[in-house]
Image 1 (cartoon, one colour):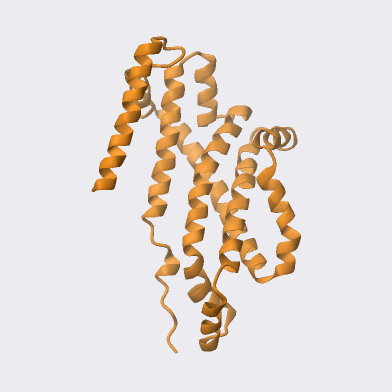
Image 2: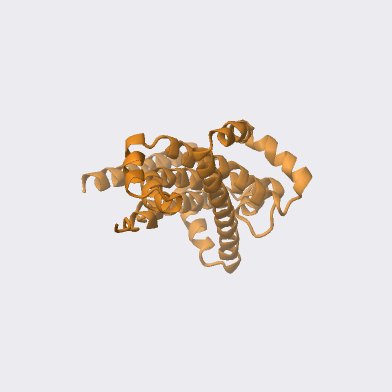
Length: 249
């Protein structure tokens, strides 16, 4: 209850700062008023075209997240068990993590075109997080726990599902949370640069060009709420690996 109260107080403080700043600036082109942004925000949900835009962006995000999670998890597991593979593959992941997002986006726009770039850039930014989260979790498991399980059952696949996955599920969930936040930012930026049709990034571009800054703030607020919603879903989701019972002898 105390935590909830502090959260509400923090949100109210941000709202109050916005209202005060709007009164001081008194220029909708620099800082739209709160009531104008809220009106634009609710217009999004009564416009079928805007709802289609939201759906398309969410599908791009979920598709990129799904592909990056599957490949990142599988390669992370391999790296966790095969040190030579980890040594070989780690420089690739390091390059993906350190390369500037704007640089790789421009390069991909030239190579892949405007339609595919948002998918590719989302995958490239999310994949290293999932891979390193999985790899780091596996090599961080205490050897004593593995030795105890091997004394009872030395089968690799049962060990993976009933020993390794429950132990690394928390780290994977953390990686997913980080991936969602980063994925939304990167995807919308790629959509903005590529002016992808039926995308939130394109709506931000059109709102900026037409000087509709209340719509820019409204779409930004929507993106923040989407990120928070995804985080809450993952926080309250009990991973399936925690439900798998240890096989009986």
